[in-house]
Length: 105
Image (cartoon, rainbow, N blue to C red; front, side):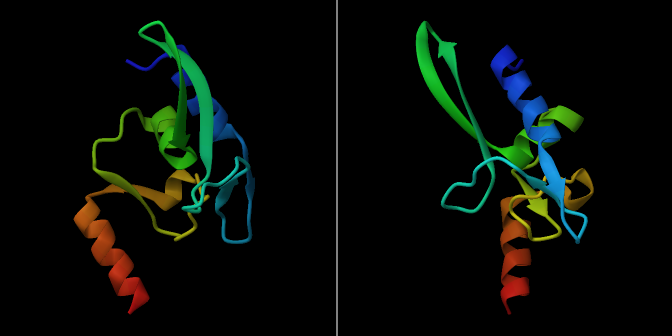
């Protein structure tokens, strides 16, 4: 079960975007050094305030579909800030890594 804070972050992540020419839903949240959009909030955990940061595409997926079953989410569009559900798919890390290697070749 997700906290109320987490649920609100899921909704915010899913609804804050602009659409680019490729049909990507570009998150308007800031990006980390890794290039992925991220959403942060703080919540009480065991009586202590804790900072939480999650990737926007993972939160958006949870908002639309619930928990992520696979190890990772792959962007078929290769746009790290994209939160378009049509561009995301669950995948194992090994398959995702192999896909990235094929793209680089």
